[in-house]
Length: 119
Image 1 (cartoon, helix red, strand yellow):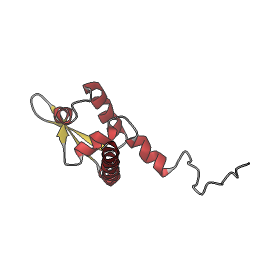
Image 2: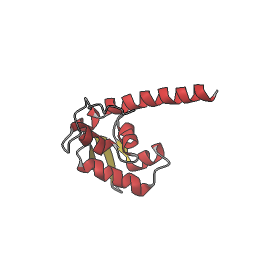
Image 3: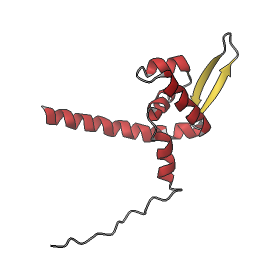
């Protein structure tokens, strides 16, 4: 028996696809978590390290630089001794929060289903 190949109704992803652009930002390891923790307001590097204890300082530093380069966060050097740095979301970064919140909600549902199946 030969199965008929169905034509996709979804337009193919193209290099300039808006979803691909968003996922290029959120697809990095720890990136959604960093953005999520900045959603409540500015945080210093050490505060983010406390919020995300499993991330190494090197990876956190790399993610913060990447997000700053993409215009998602802003880095502000405070005039203190010793100098400290705060990170905050830009308007573009704040626009990512509803997408992350939706992922969190689906994640809760998936965990609940897994628990129901295990019991």
